[in-house]
Length: 431
Ligand code: GAL
Image (cartoon, rainbow, N blue to C red):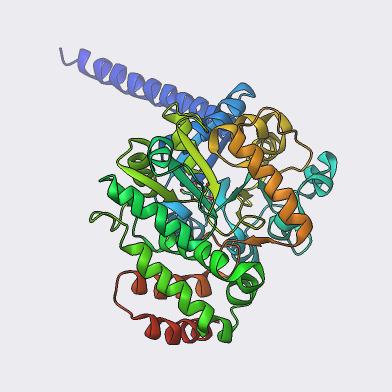
């Protein structure tokens, strides 16, 4: 036996060595496969988590899958992306940014300023982006003259979405100013439904507020008050009317509005439990997903009194500097996003309109056709203006400061007079 033991031990140690070698080999194979996989994969941070948003994002995932590019999803729920920005900060600080990130307006500039953006100039030149992406977007897709982001779409925020049955019952006449809007909301109330479906979170409060600013003051006032953050405009009589109207609109909300996500409010209108919702046209994505048709089941109209102007918001995928091994997949993703066929396939689901000016409206529904026409008109008239709530009017600090005052006022924590005093002060402090 004793003679066998060393042999036995020898066998064991040989086996262990063999297993060790095999494991090392396997690890090597896994590593190589991993590297190959990483080269063909994009990791995407976004906040498209509602039904309509996820369906639209799927169009991109499938497009990339066909090209053999894997998708690592990093969804961070929360409309308008404030939670997503916190998650992004953590990744960038750790030196490990995702491949592509959904970003809006001034946030694109802030991140680019940190020197973490990839350079898309070669691709943009090859595909002629300069000629087809509207100037208003390019101002944010480029940093220091270099392309850093691929614009996906153009949304706009000054829309009102109506349940068609409730609207017909209320007389079927589209309101053209705030007074007529209040009359229609009264009619919804009389039907025993929630008149205005609203979710009480700062970005949604701001989305409603900016539409009211445009309605009450018109485009020149919007420019002064919101784009220039002029202290006189922020505290004068026109702004007083805006805040008074906001207080009045509040009386048409249901008691559960506080903190509600935007898509749940859309669902109330879809189900006929509410009459109207003021929201960007991503809300149409929810209607479409519920198999509803514009003109039959719902009405899309410009927020009363804002016809002729467009408050825009455009989703862009900013590409981060992730090193050469991921660059090929990253460029393929950017190229896929600007592909005209993709622009149609994605935007018809998302509710937005293309980020390119050379795409026919033929495949789009009536709301999007109107959106594209309004956009062209506003762009030529100089009434295409950035949305505050979605980061295209002011840098993040000023935006947050303004939304703070707007939300506090809407929730009754500030009187109108106090809000008029606080608004210019908050802006000045944030600058
Ligand atoms: C916006 C974004 C839209 C939409 C919305 C709600 O900021 O640009 O694409 O999804 O948030 O999540």
